[in-house]
Image (cartoon, rainbow over all chains, first blue to last red; front, side, top):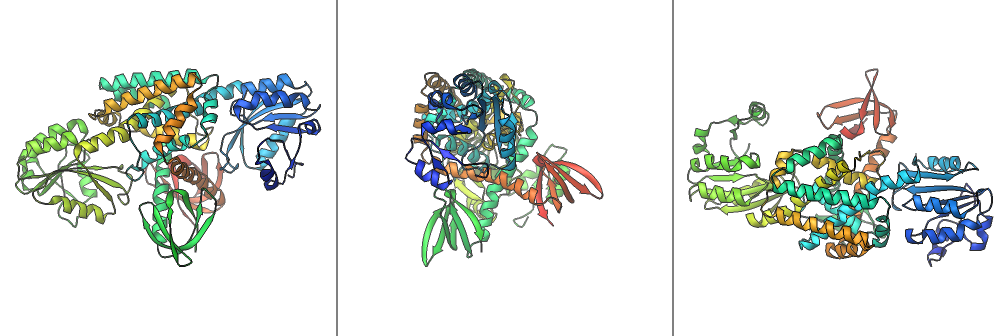
Length: 316
Length: 316
């Protein structure tokens, strides 16, 4: 990296491949005391353990940071187990590994910073086009209890209800708005359950889950008394700018429609598709497009590709 | 219309404007007995009343149809209050008034059809590029109890929980996936509460709301016993193709990113924006783009436009 050498310390067998991919070197636990900056990025449930190993080895004038989805406990433990002369800064990038950093948000929760590392981090993230928000670890965890825990909790509840009802979502029959919601449910259910279980351990999540349960009970009673609309109106008045949400979601719906129209307009032409699962590209002539299946002629042979997992990269 | 003359019978003061817009004529209740096809499209809570007025006036050999979001009660009442010699067909277009018909789904629930009107409806919808699904009124209502009622119920519950928690969603701080979910909540809350209250009166909705409440209670207990991940895994195994949902939602996220990138690339150029609220277009030079605000120079004056309610129609 232009900011210095990057080292990886990891137990995963993937570490060799990843190190090569990002031109980093591997290092050992003993070498940590040579490092200027150490960023901890491990599963939430291993965070405390790793901090206790790493923090005491940090040299004077260095920076200890982490990328955990919770911030109160990692920052307080980094502060506790490192010397006063070590800077401690928590970070939470609010986006997944598949999303480019540009325009995305990183929350920074400074612990102590005698050496002014915060401005270096800000500078690096700024160069990458990220949006930086600075708050306290507690503010972060309270915010994420609503943003992450309530979102995950409500979507997994939705998925569980589908299971209880024995309902299989068929994407083809779902109208656009509903298909987006069902995809949000499927997306959450596609993630690592252990990680999402750990995120629910946010100290403020229990209060949020209780508020959601109370809301469901209240709305259910209201619906049975034909007062659903009253509760809906009250919720809307709290939410405030529902019109902006409406228009933004209209754009999403049109996005799906536009994708289909674009593909239809390319029938008979040479196209390039990218498999989102493997990142491999396929180039060939689009001979047929029906429901969700693209039939593409590649070297004289017709292959069937699902639109769900392919995106159009280029027309010829 | 190329299929015949269109008449409007309505009490709304809008009827004159609408009739002119779609080149239709107005008609009176007495004239219904001259009509070949009557399609009832009124608020759910007025449907029964209107059917009782209209159905007995239908002439022999005609078609009585409706567009209500529920199908069992309107179809059974249309059958009951019209003569045996009148065709009765229920329809439910699964999309809103802002979405073009092409590629969208219309559910058709035939009641009785001695005159073969079903194939005419299919032909007209087919010409418009709609996808047609035929099922019984009961199947329709059972399906919609999950698709519509569960979706609305869970999203309004989410909105109510935000109110209980005193949380104001700030679009700028929400990561992409969460912003899509919060927009789904805002979108629902932007709709007519009376209509959504009526949709919750679906005869199978009560069972669906109960399943959702049970799911929330079960998942809450699981989360408190650190077993959130187990329930999440079980829900995922029922949902099955979570990967397809994941990739489809990735495309939505990229869509939002692409919009921003496209606008950034147009800084300094002439652009055309459409206001999604009013359908008016604005043409001018894009001089600045910051967070959510577009500054466009129109005839020497700079106007501020929100990206939320404008879409890019054309670059120059």
